[in-house]
Image 1 (cartoon, protein in one colour):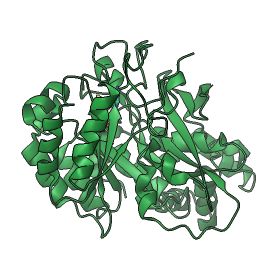
Image 2: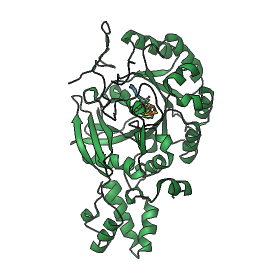
Image 3: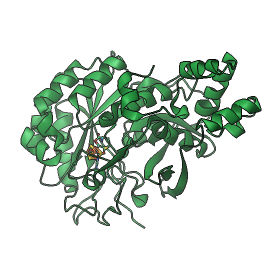
Length: 408
Ligand code: SAH
Ligand code: SF4
């Protein structure tokens, strides 16, 4: 149920963000049948219908009452940018005209497919510990990346959202609304399988809305995603990591944007490290109540000259020792507002080698949707555009894991 904190901070709860029990309470108070509560929740969360006039199995007077109390679409799709690799970036215009972005990342799955090759596209790579018994035709499995804020207050120097600054939190209806809208735009044969909180914003800075969105996304009568298929990525807000662990018993997949293994380098890249330095962050990770056989994803954006030295990789090996992790290395996607960029490809491979030699599972994350600015850190605000700049001369991108950037 809604906590006092939640009510004080965010004002009235939008009907799209109501959980089944809240629908039951709200409709009972109006003298409606309990069954109508189930129907409304299902229209919204299962069928993605937010307009009550389209809820045809409800009595007309109830449809009118719901419209009056504000049930309706939370935003509209302003643009769909389709990348050559199948990635789609949806620009969603919210009620107050603010725009946010959400990305659909398809990857082919099913018997005999090469799903695992694509697994590093997001953190959907927990497939590596899942044995598929699905005998149906190969489906196109989609990971959706969603935003939690307009802008971001954390100020990471390599990130377009961070450089642009914080505008406002998203409400839970706007967070879950991205998935409701996204599902209506899936292509034939596509299936939403994973949701990653890796778009614009810091999910744990907007904890209450994020937590409610998690409950909605994983509710069996709604979208019904399994908790292990939903990943929250954070720059390291220690108290909220602890809270997330408690509130969801460690079942929500956790990704940590680490990006450095010593405090000086990390603080230079991510100001949040001054508030929650590595020792505190690592203690929170060690205390996260991970279920058996699950791992925390460590995201490490490689920034040339800042955190890409092999000695930093050795420090990382020590820092992570004993923690069940998988590591995603992400060569920095250049952004126009910063002179920073990715290392030479050889340095990326050398960094990876230190980690794999030490026994860690370590992917180099492919850039998806690069030609539509949908890659990480390119979910932009204020006209901050990704730089038209690729790997430097002499680099030799390995096609399987890092295609050279394409820009149209
Ligand atoms: N705020 C959260 C989630 C959104 S950012 C977080 O920081 O974890 C999602 C991921 O994209 C983070 O790991 C972030 O560090 C990474 N990222 C941001 N800008 C990037 C860039 N320019 N190149 C590569 N990765 C970037
Ligand atoms: Fe915010 Fe994440 Fe970007 Fe840092 S990387 S500024 S926390 S969105």
